[in-house]
Length: 240
Image (cartoon, rainbow, N blue to C red; front, top):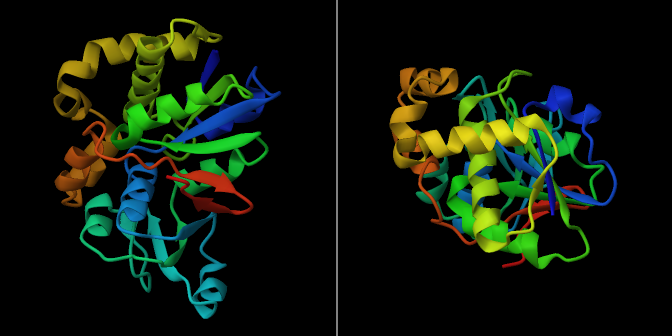
């Protein structure tokens, strides 16, 4: 298995692994964490959108609206991208139209991949096992959503955690770029106390100012979900 880490969507087009690969999209704070939470709460499908304009059309089609910009819920949306909010709701069978500042942009950016999966600390082990079980697509690109084009500490750490998890399950792992090596090394430094280490991160500080400490702490918990959402035919679904 070859693994490449892309630290920002702005770097995605220049990646080395372009043929026959799975892209794992990660936005720990908070889109990909919230997606796993929404499916845990019973959502049937989630349509990622990179702008707010289509939301009205999806609302007319009966979708629940979920939208966030700059860390805050968009006016008129039922949900933002708070994982703890989703976990407090009953979303059984609901279809959700979902737009966020960074995460949904990355999902759509990666749509040219053979497969697109959603990664977060909450589904780390389940994701690693799913990647290894797919013998037809051995190469993996981890696309970190970052913040408005810049890399983010928490997404980079997740990339390192995924590499470490894959190494534990399968010794045949090759890192193809320096970003992957940096992410793995950073994870080894931070893994014993992820929350404290990430308190310096700019987006952690932003969310703390907005009183989302519970979301941050939940997003850094490992293996609380077995759901691995997949982007397929314009929507996110789970096959668990």
